Image (cartoon, rainbow, N blue to C red):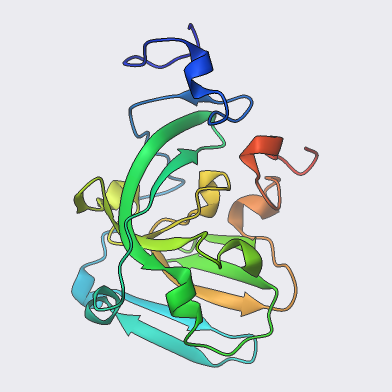
Amino acid sequence: MGSLSPGFHGKTHAFEGRLPPGQYPTESFPVLSAGPTPHIPTDRWSFTVTTEVGESRTWTWDEMMALPQEEPTVDIHCVTRWSKFDTTWRGVSLDVLLDEVETAADFVVAESFDGYTTNLPLEDVTDGKAWLAHFFDGFALSPDHGGPARLVIPHLYFWKSAKWVKGLILTPENEPGFWESAGYHDYGDPWREQRYWSD
């Protein structure tokens, strides 16, 4: 029990099947950022998907909000070893946005307003596995947690769920992002403890 954060009581076996190795559960939502927190007004926000041949599709905030919305409830896992269960988001499935472009790419790079990037196989952000989220637990997503909109890709470590995201670039080749170029694992599966390149 010593590894559990304050507020969690009971036995760890209650989390069997939900807590990846090396993680501890927490009820808090730690804020981890590499730099200053961007504050992007929704009237200046846009999201662009750019294909491997340079074609692009851009949505304004109002256009994104008019798209079909989903409310996934998922567990999330940070590479710094905390896991948070049953987080509820509201946002647009990336399937909806990617259906608007023609691509034969196998990879995608997510770009954020602060310059952050992270890379993903395209198959990991399609088929209902990823969202562009703007609400968390019933409230507009705060800037500290990536608002006005961030990616949510719950089956990978949370550094892949880019905060303050402004777009996706589709690529035929894998292009490591910010943390991946600094030694983090290229994929980041929490169930396989893929924290660093050597894992």
